[in-house]
Length: 427
RNA sequence: GUGGGUGUAGCUCAGGUGGCAGAGCGCCAGGUUGUGGUCCUGGAUGUCGUGGGUUCAAGUCCCAUCACUCACCCCA
Image (cartoon, rainbow, N blue to C red; front, side, top):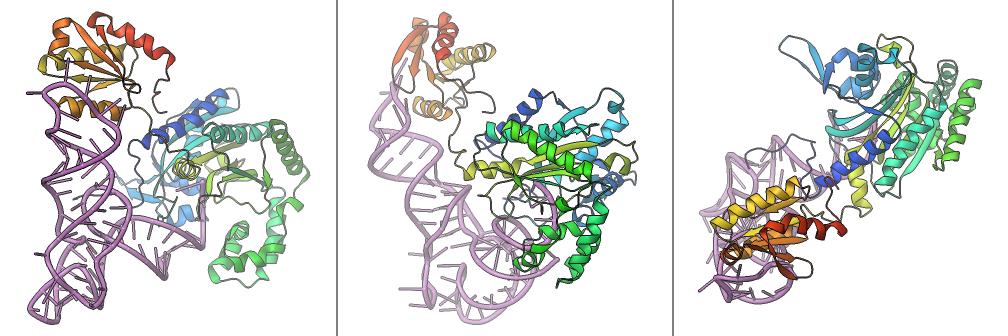
């Protein structure tokens, strides 16, 4: 072993990798059904975009960014998240000058230089969705419902939705001051005291029992909301109720990035250990202005594909190994291999997933290959069959085998496979 | 960045008190020269994470280092 993957980078190998694609497909399906379009944004951006977009006070920006100078001397950064990029692209290309909201989704890797642990990686895979240019609380609820639908489509049953609001520029400052007053009276360690000054809300999220106990009676944002934030929050909740999406009001829920305002939410999985957030989102009504754009509200979420993989595993939903193909060719001899190669390619063109044994593998080895491929049928072709102009079609589940004329093999297989479950790509 | 745990075959892991490198699974081959998934038999694969030290002798003891892993912090 001369090389190994960089620290903190998960890899997904077959057969597990099929589930990785399925996770993306589940959320993409839910997004598409709600009229969201795909957007492809760069993996790296001007460092300043993230510094201003994510927030100078966040850990993500202060110590977790993969920042480097390119050959032209520009400071660029591997994206630590997607929202800043998606909003930047929206503004740069004027997508927001058309009808609003702009509804977009994207997916891929993001990067944070952190100490890896279970569910926390330096290269993390996310699915991201954004609705830009709307203040309608119905869209807040819509994004929650889309994420929820994604989890449901994957069969996850233990996901919890935690919901909160962070107020807006009107009401948050007063709350923030009240919270800071409260926190200053506590016995906290130096880093936490500092955090209380820079971003007091995050102290509410501390997991340490000694901190937790002290902030138990901290003032809550929900008691300090302005009328419009309260109305917005109530509306979101009643819409979720209409949709039958269950949530838990979590007044201490805080998101790590500075840009969040009003609605925030998090999806949590109880079987995951320390890193249990499998998705999170919220409103970012001031972000556009932070990065030099016009006032443009927005809401969106990102879900962690890696953590969803862990959740699927924890719920026992990764057990089955999907069939790779429906048909598998077993040739005996060079001429048979040549003929079967053509048959297999014809099957593929006809929409039937097919593979075959290579390397002049013996009959026994080739049959093993057929069994491992998960194929429903093996096509066995040897000298005798060539002479007869027929292929042996063996049902690998029942063991039943019949000879089919070579000329009729494609329609015959299509017919036999029609009733049976076909392996779908990425399923 | 802080703390704990673990590094032995492709994978999961055994290897008291130092004494010839092991098992199961997987892989390959044969039993069955035209039949897989079961069964039986045989086979291949190791710088024992890396470097140094102690010793006649180190997978085993000591030091360092790296990696992996879990937790804190933080977050998807």
